[in-house]
Length: 276
Image 1 (cartoon, rainbow, N blue to C red):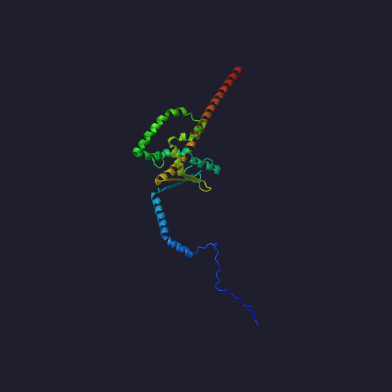
Image 2 (cartoon, rainbow, N blue to C red; image 1 turned 45 degrees about the horizontal axis):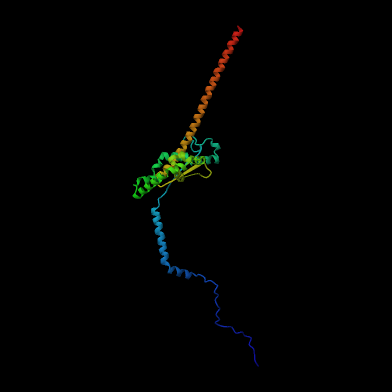
């Protein structure tokens, strides 16, 4: 009799076909091998980056920062003197402080600082000084000669085309015309300053940045000094106007009093004449 076995045969050494659409995974060993093979390239790029960074740092101009602080109002100043920088300390609100910060950033104070420190003679704020010190080259002389020829030929055309400046352009250049030759200097000086309030306190911090540490300290201190002088001048002008008004008022009252006394004397004389 034939007996059928119930044991199933298991195939051996069967190879499962690989799918082409499955990407190969990057292993740690593969990454290490890749770095070993390209270590010269990596070291070359690293060395080049370090050298370039060092050259940039060596050629970079250092910038120095100076900080000055001032307490607005009579707080902190009453022990030294009775002069408070901002009137009505009890009304020193955030809006008032913002106004004082705007005064510190204004063209008026920056112009005063530029004039006092003579920044027009410092190359950092007036690069034209360096150009004046250099002797003109042959190429520069040729350029100037060509420009002079072109300018002479275009004078008649420009005279016919040129119109009177419009009201818009005149109004737009009003601030620049007031600053005059200090226009560019004040613009650079404004970028060198940072004025802000210390938190919610009454302390104002002025930060000045410059290539010269002594100049940075001079900028911050001079701005503070000019701010105090500006407030002093403003208060002095207000006091002078009040004094002038008071003198005028006293003069008017004296005239009125004299007229009243004269009227009383005349009235008394008439009364005595009528009594006689």
